[in-house]
Image (tube, rainbow, N blue to C red):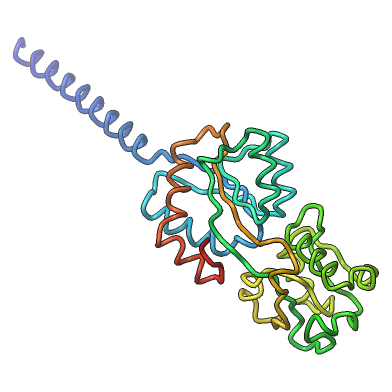
Amino acid sequence: MKNSYKLKAAMVMILILTAAGLSACSSGETSETETTTVTVSAAASLTDALQEAADVFHDEHPEIQIDFNFGGSGALQQQISQGAPADMFFSASQSDFDVLVENGQIDTEHSKALLVNELVLVTPQDDQTVDSFENITEADQIAVGTPESVPAGKYAMETFETMGIAETLDPLLVYAEDVRAVLTYAERGEVNAGLVYRTDALTSDAVEVADTAPEDAHSPIVYPVGLINESENAEAAEAFYEFLQTEDALAIFEEYGFTAQ
């Protein structure tokens, strides 16, 4: 009888220890699969290249998930200035980026001018109304980004001013919320022409690059990237920030038409 009692007690103890061990293993597995999410506010023109770069980064760092908020750099800067959550800002405008530096939201030692782009004139494939800046005034409608919030729109307006055709083109302009929206207008044939970055034009088979804006016609198109000081995921954000400066990441950007700074 005593032996039977001891045997039952031993079996109960084994079950308790086994359950505890399984619980510990389960807890350990959960801990290992926990991920940190890094939120990157980035210019719309970076969409395709950044998403591919993030996929490569995630393969190397499965514990870090990269989420993007793409849009016009000016609008993104305003969002971050007003407290919108972000761990990193990747801008298509140095001036919008500098606002956050001046506000103390980004430190210069945690920022870098990483890429360069070009401004081009695109037209729908089946629309020959415009074939260069020389006859752009023959268009009925021209899409550009809203210059107050879209750097490509600001560069477009600077180009028109330099060429002395800003007043002539003003009634023809259709404003878009970001550079990808400008590209969409041209792809659909809703305008005769649009001004986008070369990198955006290269993503589409529905438009042709009719001309390239002279470099001295507008401000330099530089893409600075930096870490947000108030980030709650600083270590993970810095890992992605450092990755973006590697040869592997820069090679991806160059495939999409960017030039490393």
